[in-house]
Image (cartoon, rainbow, N blue to C red):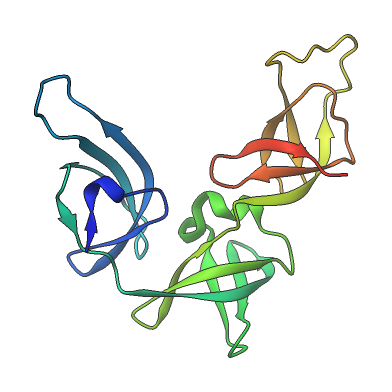
Length: 188
């Protein structure tokens, strides 16, 4: 059991026997004296991909899903299927692009990730907080670019687009935060 005030992104909850992962979590403190904090969450069903929004008062207890995390290696992508291998048992499995969601855009061949095993089958994967990806296409360097919040789009080697500072050019490796798709830094 987990207290609603301790919820955060990535926690796996059990609703009606199905695993649901928290993809967004927000806390609101009412202005009325004595009112408890309200936790609003957006959860994704790890089996069928459906999304729900729920709200809880502070102190409510929720059931965590019974799941196991295992280290796996991403092997390759074929059509809309992503193939992985368990590092302990060497068993191979695949997940669809829909099951992976936004995580699919951060996977590189040979990458180590965590798989989430629920009731004996893999439901989803968990990426590291940051990954290093190569910029393959972006607009040219802007002359006189300042250090202000100016950003430009850049296409990375996996096909996703992120906003990067204006001084970055193509063929530069950058670190990207997988939780929100944000540029972190240039890799030296």
